[in-house]
Image (cartoon, rainbow, N blue to C red; front, side, top):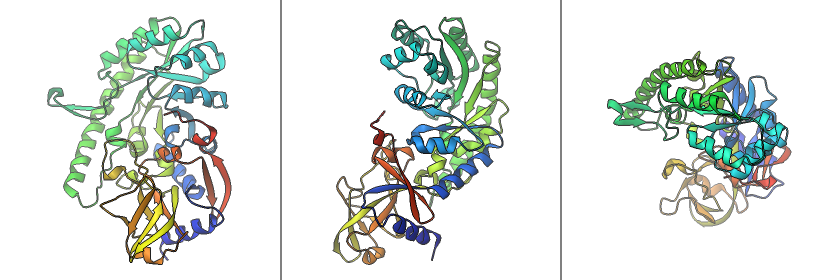
Length: 400
């Protein structure tokens, strides 16, 4: 029996009393992935990206482990909810225009102490000031550095379109604007190198593209390490008591941690290890989050149909954004239909061994987005469900 077949047997036994659709997290794999992230971080604390987890119970579980400290959130409303839930170190990773939430933040000392907001433009400070009303609490601010690699005099850009702040001078200018402005305190710098951390460099059947990606990433790492160090020096000249410099992502943990200028690493997807993280040479993890759909039809030889399944991930649309049938091994989509809104036909010889009511296990393309489809996660240890816990959705929150 292969390791994957053994996992399927465990998951089927653990959830035999549960009807699909359902989602589970294998806690043995989750914990092993957490340990691997800590090992790769080399002693620097890991700030957990909540968008990649979207379950308070699992955020609490990982933050109780040595090597993890703080949350990187994705909306301001989520940040305030987490702070009210007892989390006390929350970095909002994206700028916000939530005026109501900013008024709450500026009016509450506990929230203002726990939450740091993201800024890359003075206009964002104007919005916060206009929204704060009578709230007089000092707002903690982090500046985001654009990590993109610019070549050919800037005519070629590699990396996400995020912050407009690319050079040390640009970041230092905004740092001075924050430092001069009453009601704000600059505490950190963040730089997410998505073109390194979020792009696989070992694509099956595409050796030349894989080699090109590795060359690009090596060039980008060198350029960013030098520029990030210069940015930190420039900002510390304005704010000597800067609290943190955050960088990284699951795919680049060990590389970012090697930079002296970086004080903490961001990671989250590496806890669940969705399918987009199968194509990396720098690390490998154990799939920990899966979902199951029931077989409801057998249209013919080598074909079964499951209920549901059309859960595409965000990003540029393409086959890599689709979930994949994972267990039993050997199933594939019908190219004419793909994963459907209500039903999904699956092809392959394993289909002939599946009965009506059997479960087919899938892996989502991206980590936390799976939790937007399910109210609860069934936590599996060995071959039994030891707890069932709510996702954000199950607690009544769909922040984005």
